[in-house]
Length: 218
Image 1 (spheres, rainbow, N blue to C red):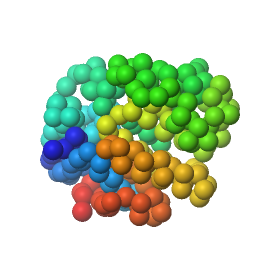
Image 2: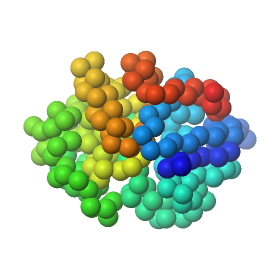
Image 3: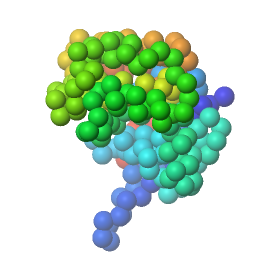
Image 4: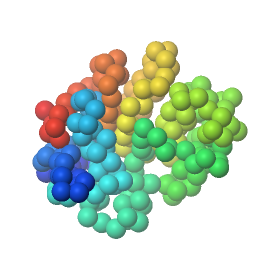
């Protein structure tokens, strides 16, 4: 039974008289314990697809369901509530609130989820090598540290679904291995994982690779 699905997804963008079709009838589903890598060139629709599946954007056509509840064509507050309860989301930027330190960002995500998470949040920070950055503000973090802190926030409430957009783009090879090990640990715990990536190393760690080009999956 899918925990996340998108059926017949279309997304259009307009700039003046020009129309860009970012998604063209995309069908995708994830079940508990799936680990899927999404690959494609820049501008192929990877980020748009993740945003629609997470309810950060609304498709112009098609239906997104999360835990058998409709996400698409619902109010922004409804989508935000579903996302907070069920989805951990790591985007390429904007994952951290600038006025909160790393621990505060993690704590806020746990509070927003309204679901009692396991652990106290410190464990995932330690696993990601951020135990010394607990009280650092985002402006004090390197690019790689910010990416890892964003992943910690995405995992803060032990969500059943995890979506990541280029989670290893700004980290070194050793940190990428650590992130992959953590993703496999979450997969074994039943988390459904969808990762958009250009990294061949990360893609090979997934159980399945989907390719997207010109808004179509293959």
